[in-house]
Image 1 (tube, one colour):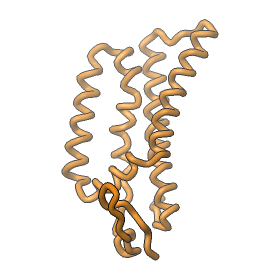
Image 2: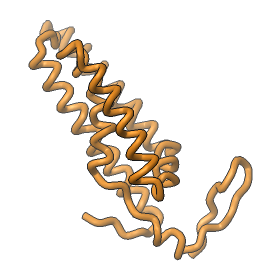
Image 3: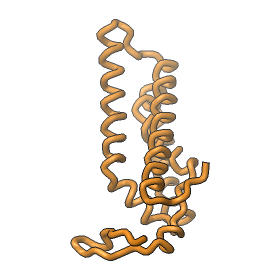
Length: 148
């Protein structure tokens, strides 16, 4: 089986099944970094010093991505360019705005630290779960085995 992929801008090459079989999925713990970034808004509202922790997580994410997961950098880039990943990002932003708007309209604005921490946990968990699911869908579409 041969699949046509973009190797460079406007240049295409065929990828063999052997090359595709070598691609390994990103571990779920890697998506936890994105989960923290997805929860950053509410974390910063719950604790004013959280922005330093979020920046530290972003730096660790970059370092881990460029060192430990160096062999999987193409997969990371492919997932980031994927239209489903963009839809997930916009969907999470829309969910957050919609939830805050609905709660505000109902007179139950999230103003406490506990409320923001709860929102952060929901947003972080949703981010990790959706990115993991997106990766599984991509691997299944390519006919690759996905560990459970």
